[in-house]
Image 1 (cartoon, rainbow, N blue to C red):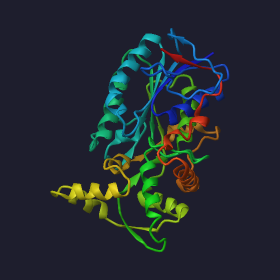
Image 2: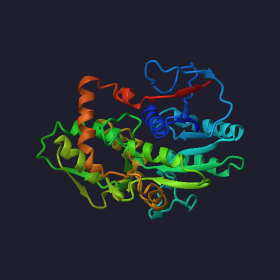
Image 3: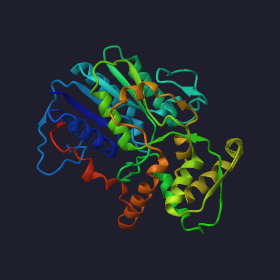
Image 4: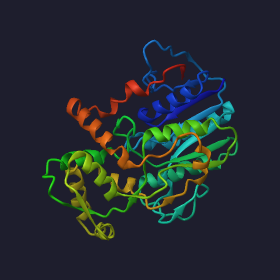
Length: 351
């Protein structure tokens, strides 16, 4: 019987990881941490008991990255240090979910074995991802594996999404743009490229690789192997939503980067983003210049049926679910997944 502690991240992702682990092994036991009030951080189905006892031993700790745009980011390094100490005490393998943000603004190929290659860390998300990985890599008394995830979108099968997903603000922006005539072409800034992956792929790939023996001190890329431009992502969502088509002006991204150094421009830029419902920090956090090489990961996942779907293959499902939830509960998009993310079988909480 294999035992796990799954902690960190958003409930939207964490619930799917727990379910994947339990679906793969019906005899497994998953410990779900509690918050300071003693409530479980995972929506459990009715009738499932949550034993209130300390965990004396565990095989794996799966520690997911910080929730984007929340106070969890400020506490992430502290929680990670505690998790590393727990892994050492319990003799557990730490499986840490990092982010492509660790590559910062590196413009070239970024391999799974790469870490500190002099990449510019241009925003808080880059610096946090780098510092967290550095903590894990320097641990000498813990067996560890690192999994770097692309920018999370929603579930490619159901379209479910929550505000913790990096692409959520852009769905909100597309929703506002649908108020414009569909025939009106929009001039879009050339923001460069990103790396978007659906939450179900990350959960499935992570659960599969966590269960593989060995592979300690290795890094795996849970990414889209192809660079994606913001124009391509917008085009897929605009087609699904009936929003105006966008025309990206080549080189405009570099122009905007230069304008950002002028007095007053950042305030104007942030005001425009606010009108679209996009947080000012979002573009920098989801902008990914590097090309992530995932050869090792794809080799390990061969013959499992786990692969990254193209964004345009599920953009319509993301949009349809977004509109349904906006129509019924516009301020409760983070709770739509509770009925599907719950662990279906044996789950226990650490206190």
